[in-house]
Length: 167
Image: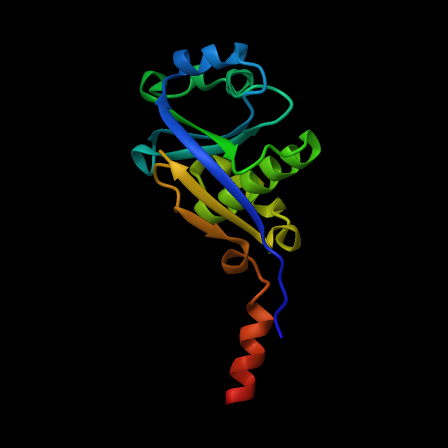
């Protein structure tokens, strides 16, 4: 029997912002969360998902400004979408940090943005198995709902056992 306890993470997305507009968010205290960057890629084309990142213990504006997006090809046309944790209650800082981290990792694992390729090998499968993300608002090209049950190896053995039993 499959047992699971779901960790539900809801993200409310807003955007698009330009690099100059996102820079203003440096001054907003506790503006933490996840962000997506869309732009031109030499192989995949223009206006595609380039990167998913997180801002934890610093604002989204501070984090994006550290990544040197101004030096990229066609930086004037980058579009940035900001995702903030949402839900019935505000979690404690420790839980907030954990949820931001888990959400970033699962979203990268599922959507595989062009510039996140080096992070894909470090995805903690076991840690993400019970994470379930609901994307609200302007989530752009992300799936509206992402489940660790679907995108990790948790169900691999379960379905193998069912298949073996029935055959």
